[in-house]
Structure formats: structure tokens, C-alpha cells
Image (cartoon, rainbow, N blue to C red; front, side):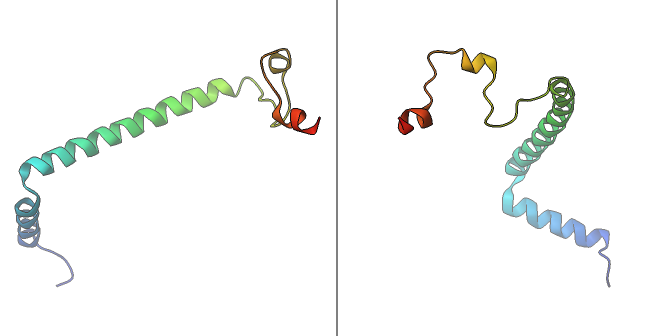
Length: 83
């Protein structure tokens, strides 16, 4: 009584097919498959890009790097408001 037999699952499958239709189920299956594939690719690429960025230490937040300090087109809004 606690477990479902194959007949229970077949009835549930039949009801799901009747409610959603085979075309919609096929679309949902392909969407789910592509989402899983994209997630796996993202995890694979994320691990590689994280290893590549570990070589260069990041500048602490709020600290201006030399490239940013030499850029004359950048306007510091906070400095302008203080003046």
C-alpha cells in the first residue's frame, strides 16, 4: 500500500498526457534537456575561467588602479560633489 505499482504510474502518465498533450510534453522535455546541458557547460566553463582569474590578484574594492587613474575622461562624482 505504501509503494506504487506500475499500473499506478501508467495511469498517472496517461492523465498527464491527456492534460498537457504530447506536443507540449515534448517541448518541455527538450527545454529541460537544453537547460541541463547549458548548466553543465556553464559549470565546466566557470571552473576554467575561475582558474584563469586566480592567477591575477584583484584590486580591492574602492582602490583605483593605475589604468583608471590615468583615464582623463572619467569623472569622479563624489569628488565633484565635495568641491
